[in-house]
Length: 448
Ligand code: SF4
Image 1 (cartoon, rainbow, N blue to C red):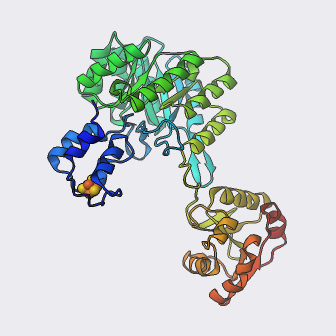
Image 2: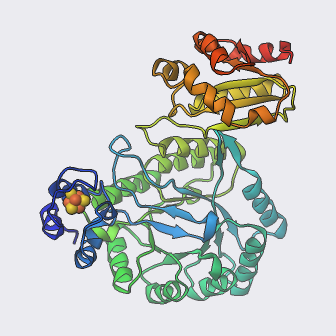
Image 3: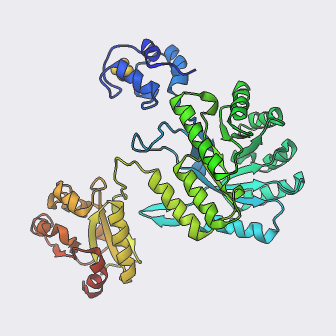
């Protein structure tokens, strides 16, 4: 059972030094108990207390990692019911289904989709992460060969799907070093699948018929020493599956019920044959509270909106979305291409870069870090003024890429033009349009 705030307090140094970011040890204890802070924030906890506090400091939904290296996917680790309380931590993984009964052309097509359906948006790469390989043939060798093919042709995360431990073991042979998720341990095969997971140090998913059975099965797995667990309540109707997601999250967070404190795996693919309805069900799980979402197929028209929804839900609502400061090349610019500057509010960057692409005029876009504020807000807050812009222009490296010294500033920052000419001797400061929509016509008429 998790410790209460008072129990945690008794294990802390009680010096009230404030180094953890809150003024007293009691406040820290309360935050730790509610999952709002992490034990690592206090540098003075004794080793003995650390051991006792490990349970209390673990997030109510334990984090689980699928895969290895840079492409590893972390799910779970959530600490709140609603994102206005604190940001949601780890976006759900999106998986494409590959069945071992599919012919080679279909498997290849799905591997291609997995690679190709990636999108750049607001400076981020949006893409799915997982391939769920499902055994339907009953043939362990066939399953293994499909898994091998996927491993050889993709670097994505892998879910091995079979309720037959022998089939899972065959698949595991082909990809154990990729640390796949083993789906699924059930009441009938739990011991053998648990052994496989333990022996290979892979995460394991448990599938049950209802929440009560699910809690019993996860308790058995944790009793066997497994912690990397993903849970499936077994519901395959939209209403029941949604209800289960909310109950699981609430039981783990509000009741501190550890047997349900794991990320979930959901299957819109098994809830409908209608692709549009499947996308809508998946979008529900993105918002509430899927850890992994398995889709029957990837279609650009539904995958892209899901990726964007996921990005939006899993941003911090208390911080604006920001693009990295730097020099961005739009359309392969050269030394006589126009140079524009804007702020790093992602929507601003997205719109301006979009307008520049539309213009087909190769351009340099300088993006200044304004803590994610838009042009007008940043300017009003003193974060986009001449004395801040000029040092950035000098240091960002644009001077080595161009022959002219002309800088186009946003129309809304026109008043900074005089100051910029003083701060950037030799530069001509040009005031661009106030509205982004007028940028294409402006750059088309622009001359170096
Ligand atoms: Fe107490 Fe540790 Fe926070 Fe200092 S850093 S106030 S000792 S909890």
